[in-house]
Length: 100
Image 1 (spheres, rainbow, N blue to C red):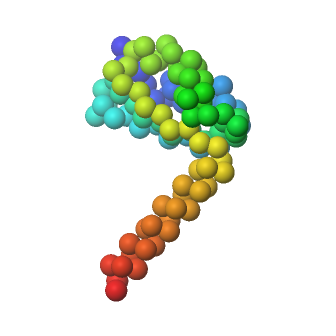
Image 2 (cartoon, rainbow, N blue to C red):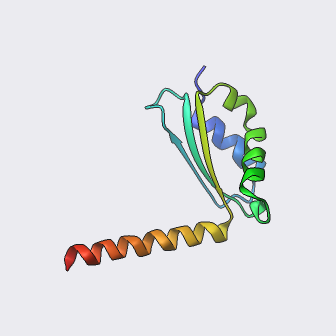
Image 3 (cartoon, helix red, strand yellow):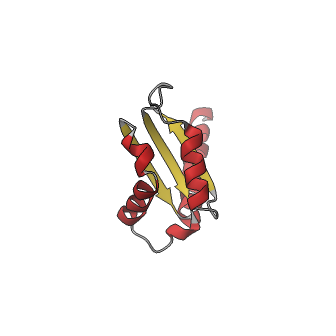
């Protein structure tokens, strides 16, 4: 039985009520067997990436058992803002280079 994005969303929102950002991408062309997620949550503060991933894997163990593949990126709000700023700067530099 394929996993629905809504199932992942509900489980993650229930577990992380303070979550600031969630992106769920079906990487299986719509068949629901492979997902990638980005989770921004202040409760990740002070936890290493492996601990964050284990936490998410435990929360979604039933859904993950039904999937072929699952990948995740987990960030604190501060880390997420730094990533967005870096991407914005790279995009601005690319535009400036293209117009020069």
